[in-house]
Length: 472
Image (cartoon, rainbow, N blue to C red):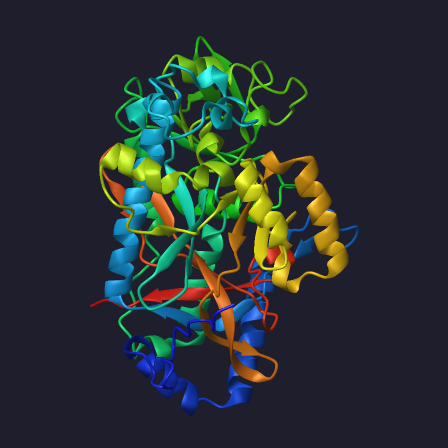
C-alpha cells in the first residue's frame, strides 16, 4: 500500500499553508496541557450525555465516542472543490431515484442492470409512479469522503437513507470553541453552528403544496433505545420542533396529526429517523410498533413530506455505488468532480476471479453492510479470516464488492504518546431543499485512533475531530 498523504506536512517536511498556525501552536503548547484539555473535553461530553449504543454488547451499551482535540483543517480552495462535487453527487442521487421510481430511462439505456434495482431488498414497489413533493427524495445526505493526495477526494459511500453524526459535528465545534479560544483567534474558521437553521429552512421548503403558510415539522424517532436517540433529541431541540414517536401521531382523512395537550395538530413534514420497514404497519412490517398506521396513504395523497423519502436505499448500496460515475454522466452530462474508489463487483465472474486471487490486498464489503461490520481488510487479516471470506464470496458473490486498500490521508492526532498522524475520513452533510442545496462548511471527521488502523467507525473504536474550513 502506498504511503499515506499527510494533510499537515509535505513529503519534504514542510508544513502546508492551511496548517501553519496550528503547527506553530502545537510547537508552543505543552503536552500536559493538551492532555488536560483532552480529559476536560471527555468530561464535557460525559456531562452533556452524548453517547452512542453498540448493538451486540452484553454490558455497557452506551459509550462515549472518543474526541480528538486537534482540529482537521481544510483550505478554502479544497472545500470549494468538495462543495461542488457534493452538490453534483446529490443532484444525481435525486435524479436517479426519480427515474428509478418513474420512467426508468437509466435501465433502458443499459447503464444500471435491472436486477440490481428490482431484486434489491430496499427497492420499494410502493413508490413506483409516486410523486414526491418537489421531486426531492434525499433531503439530507451524508456523503463519506476520503482523501489520498493533495488534489484527489474519493467518495467512499453515499448515505441517502437516515444519515447520522451531525450532532457530533455541532458538539465538537462547541467544545473546541470553549476549550481552545486562543487557537480559534489565530484562524478564520467558517461556521457550522447555523446547520440547525439550514436544516429547518430545508425541511420547511419541501412541505407539500397542501400545507399552510408556516408548515409544521416534527422529528420521528424510534425511541430511547435507538443508538442515535441522543442525536434525535438534540436536533429536535436545536430546530425547535417536536420530537415524536409513532404513538404520538395518527392519520385521519389522509392527513397526519400529532397529539398535543391543545388537541390534534396537523404535521406537514416528518424528518424521520426510522427505517422504511417500520414506518407504517399497514404497508410494511405489520409487527412494527414504531410507525404510524396509514402514514403511507397520507404520503401517497401528497399531504405530508417524509425526509428522506421512502425507498432511497436503492440509490446508496455499494453495488449501485460502483455505477455512479456513469450515472452522473447519464443525468448531468458532466464528468464526476469527486472520484469513485475503483470497485470490483463480485456478481461478475471476471471480477470475482480477480478478487479471489487478491483477497490479501483488497477490502471486501457487503453490498448492504454499514458501520464497518461484515468486511474484510485483506492486508490486516490472517489466513483463517481470508479463508472464511473466500468461502462466503463463493457462496454468495452478489452480496459483495471489493476495493483496493486506500492509503487514507492522515492528520495530527493527540494520542497517549503525544501528537501522531492517524487516518481520517469526512462526512459532510448535504441539505437539498425546494429552493437550493445547502452545505455547511466542514462535516464530521472520523479518525482511526489505533496506530495503522484504517477503520474510522465509532462502532469499531474510531473517534471524531472538529473540521475547520478556513475562510478566505
